[in-house]
Image (cartoon, rainbow, N blue to C red; front, side, top):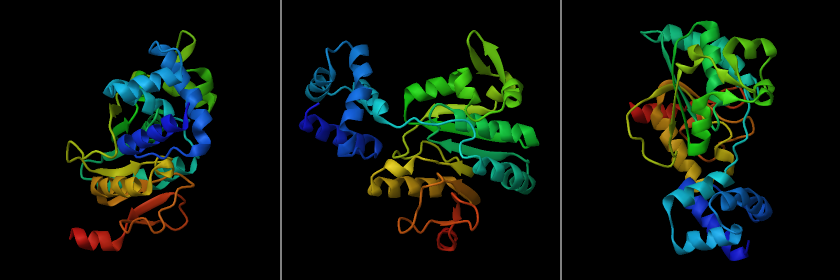
Length: 271
């Protein structure tokens, strides 16, 4: 891959997805684009990119972007958010809502493990959820919607008892049981886009999404999350993600790493 190709890739990723592609990732980018080149019938990555620059095609452009995104995820990742959700948030929100249902959005759900983990939590404590899960990657959403995972993927975060409770064997893999599958609605969405509906949520998970984004794009995403969150709702970010100086819309919850609520100034402005 030439430096010029890499510069264009940086622009493509930043413009359409809001993500940074730093110079130290040039070899990683080339490695990830290799399978895309082979799948699309190109001799190598350079040929793939040459055709993309000469004849921009939306589907090919998104295939390239998806290959470069970090899809790393696992069930009940980092544990603490799910403990807080189980022990504190869902019981309290369930009591506070007139119909007892809690609306949750898993934004940037990747291949679905986070969304299924949230769904399990709601079922296990008896709090009904309206759970929406979205991601920029169509391929990731297709896998998430299928609910099919390898034994290694399942055991990465879940005990054998939990696996047997919520998954059924299918050939050499495991599939989410219907009881759980009916809980989640998956769909493709770009967090940079204006929402297509007016849905608002009690809890939003947007974990390990903002860290690799351009600062200006992060601000845009945070503004969208603020508008989507009810005034007494909660936002979960990744354990290592910080908002210092980036927004006045949210404030961290003391003693709850990665948990945010709307700031007083935001609530006064809304009023």
